[in-house]
Image (cartoon, rainbow, N blue to C red; front, side, top):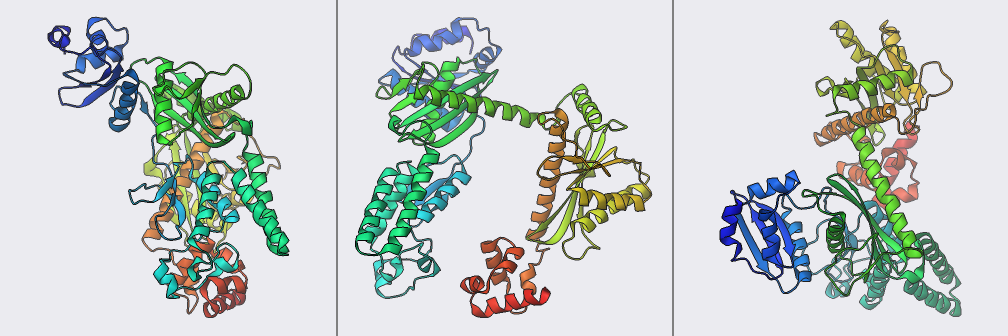
Length: 602
């Protein structure tokens, strides 16, 4: 739409507050904006010269304008945020790392179950959250389970079913983790008290929960139930320790949302801290993409509205580093200069700086897309740091892996000129090694790889990385020596946890500077071989290539084997279980078969 074309409709635009939408010739929504005066704001796009190329590009694409009048500027703010979140127009500020977040659901049923979910559906259940981290949710649920007795079974505990005596208490009841509602040993009213304690814990409001347990402990002591009183005392102690660990500044600060922002060109980074009852209960860092050189105040204002909506925050106060426009007049916007709130803001700023640096370093880990001179400098730096005779333009890395302590496979990735050369990647099904032997497995796959290159007269890499310690490195070198290839390439070991590099025969490891480009490249190669190996494993498992070792036990079927692995995570862990633990899991007969099998194996 040209300026002349716009003049024909300018007089028809209202002077009221509202939102406006720009569409292109394909009816694609390009941009959503808000205005105190719609005519004045929209006209500004067509009547002045923009210094920003991006704004000029937007105006060139506009073919149709649509607007909605609203009662106030605050309503325009809220509607703009809602539409941007829904449609994510190309020229608006967008959240770059948007994803689904986990909830804790209290299921709508008798004696409601409590569990983690990513799907929020309209089924009448209560959804608490969302939360920023699955790990945090699991930690919370483990904490809740240790302190509040809620059922974990999937039984249909209707009053009619319970009255008919259809169910019997399980091991969870005998362990003290459940009060046995399935046998009418707990009423729904008593169960609801536990759910309320759960809600308080998730809100960081532990005081009512602690007081409830103190009251129960006192009652138990008065009734001479000292064992029960001791258990309650331990729970109170656990809650108080958790509360002390969680409180950041002061319990008297109440509820507030703290935001910090850092701008870097077209990208903005924000950190959001949700404080409830003086406790930081959620933290979230995010990355936003700007398009029209929006002021940093506008970006933060938009991010605040979006994040408070996403995480269902009802906090009455927002703490920010500078004044922003916010649509809800009842919400207090605070810009602290000193005190506890300033400390919280400083903590948010520290996190946003760390997040930005982490993003930068993550990008630096891979040299894809970098120009030739940049890649060459990194490889030359690696040559210097490891004292290699040649620039490592061809690097290969090996890693062994096994599933639940059984069935080893190996993977090899190849990097050329600092970037992955995926046609040269290789998977290895281990052929000559019986059982789990990392050293023999490494020797086999390294020998097979370089014997093939030797036979085909292919060039050898300048650097070979063995993902493992000195044992795997020694095994790899043994295979290379048997091929007569010693001196043809430099072979090093990479310790799995410490990121230390071992050279053959050296007593001391080489530790590269933590943020050096050399170590970043080695990390990226290691991460790639892990990814490639895990993908191979999953594919093999989905094809049924691996047979669970437990299935080899006569009398143990596939379902029982899978149940044990799901519960105990590995064959090794099952092997270590006592007979009593196995009986609790699979019954006396099968437990005896399993113990006898492993006993004879020993």
